[in-house]
Image 1 (cartoon, rainbow, N blue to C red):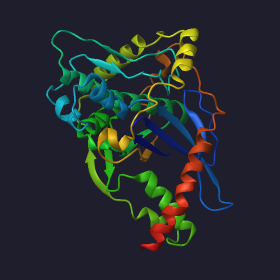
Image 2 (cartoon, helix red, strand yellow):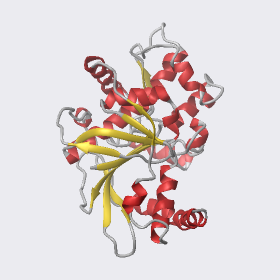
Image 3 (cartoon, rainbow, N blue to C red):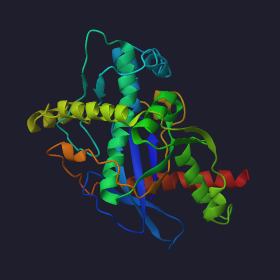
Length: 328
């Protein structure tokens, strides 16, 4: 029942399924989470990945040029109290989890002559919360549990508007930790545990502390209205690229959109992509929205994504553990 979410250039959520391999049927990836110590039990996870989150703010700054720096996004978004029916689907490289629609493209829908750049900035920030909500719904379908509390980190957590809106959309408290670099911290703690800096996992747990907590305040009817608009906006983003056009795009660019995206820390001008933890409890109140898009495909299970993540993390862990142990 534990999970982590990252608000960085993209958005990533992993739910710990402990030693059980759970094959998702609702658009998530099954991957390796971690293993502590040689011969220790291997823990697995369900993972949902979203390609564009913080990178959307960079797009507003560099392409539309309605921001001079990323930190202005919250100020600009706060010039309007609501999105006034405007939705931004940032499917610049298609839709990732839980939809997996490569034919989707980005769109801004519901626009009228009364909308301003403040509405566009708000819709861009809200899109991250909607996408996280969609992944949470997919996790509900696979695990039959829903959120009790959400611990967050990564660059996007510096944006209070986004964090409050996220709490409203998932209807559970959102908790920010004191140390925002949770991925780096986790690697250091695991390495330190291996060399005896800490004696066990229980001692490590005591090192975590809360910096700020966001409670859901939005009325349920208002929240549901926002989500209905988002679901409708998703349907408008589909079917823009056929197979031949998509293949030609890959040949022309050599990669998907976002090849030159900055680090998440640059995009949000704060901590880089990191992880969080979600404590789950049994509840069937929210129903997943993945069913509403016809033709959704399940991602390939042999991508090696989880293995690559472990290799990179493992390479950092040795140095991190050494530094933490040396400075203890």
